[in-house]
Amino acid sequence: MMENAPNVAAAAYDSDTAHSHLLARLSGGADAFTRVVLAPLSGITDMPFRRLVRSFGLKLAFSEMIASGELIKGHEDSRLRMAPDGEGCHAIQLAGREANAMRLAAQLAAAEGAELIDINMGCPAKKVVGGASGSALMRDLDHALRLIEATLEGAGRVPVSLKMRLGWDRQSLNAPELAMRAQMAGVAWVTVHGRTRDQFYEGRADWSAIAEVKEAVTIPVIANGDLVSRRDHPIMLAQSGADAVMIGRGVCGRPWFPAYLAGCAPADLASHGLADLICSHYEAMLSHYGSAAGLRHARKHLGWYLDRIGTFDTQKALLLRETEPSRVLSGLQHLLAGLTIGDADPDLRTLRKAA
Image (cartoon, rainbow, N blue to C red; front, side, top):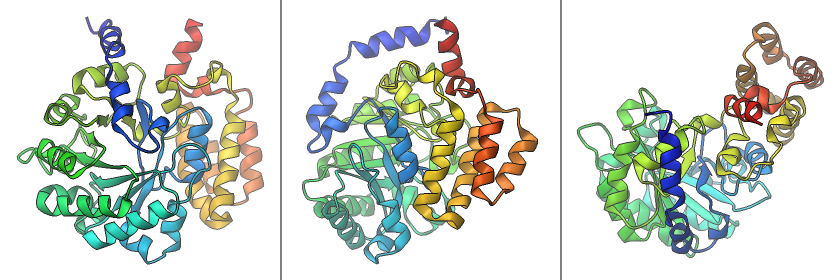
């Protein structure tokens, strides 16, 4: 029975008009929206990575989370996080705990070209929650609403969305209530990660629980959490009833995956060379951050890429310790010679065999 479930669900979703409704309800930048969205991921979805993800055809990719207080103070790191990637819709995510800071940050972001602004009420990290931001805001919906209203005021005509979890814990699953209040305030859509804050990233995301949010509002709902394969996509949509999906950690070491899932990637994606892609991303990170900081940012991405291949433990360790960029680049070219994207992705390996 499960072997046929994805196809059945996919057929049901394809007959739906949810996507056209989604576009119709958004103002400004709506033409850049698709059923598949890249999540804002701290330390991952920086400008070089978003540009790479977009190069495969994806329309909408959010920036890393940007702290509103730091942005309005002009911190260089916050400015760097807000840098546009040069193509498509410029979408950023703001986090904060003070209404005035969120208002001013949204105003600044809109003035500097942001076309979509997302509010973070889902991050479970202790540093963020300890500062009364992220998913901590789900413990006080009145305060959360004040932040939403302030962000909307600062954003002006720029659409504002909201990302949340199911609740703080299993005893307070208040995502439907927060979504309803956000809709009344004027939020364009909501994204729901199918876990509570106290779960962090443990266990499996509960996609069916997202359906309660979908039933509570008329604005679009995006489902997030544990989408790591093409097979999961129709099941996630069927269980959540969502209008679209957001890919988070499933993109690590696999920047082509969102576009592949959206159906907008090149037809010959599986045959694209892996070494040139990774080397290009590596050089872009060094250019964006400078050599010293770029090396630190690059290590995690190189680790994820090489983990996708899975057979280079010794060489991987050497490359991740290497500090001379030219030796890293030559090492990658030698190690990955002849390998393609299809060799690094189970979904694409299956596709290539079928072809």
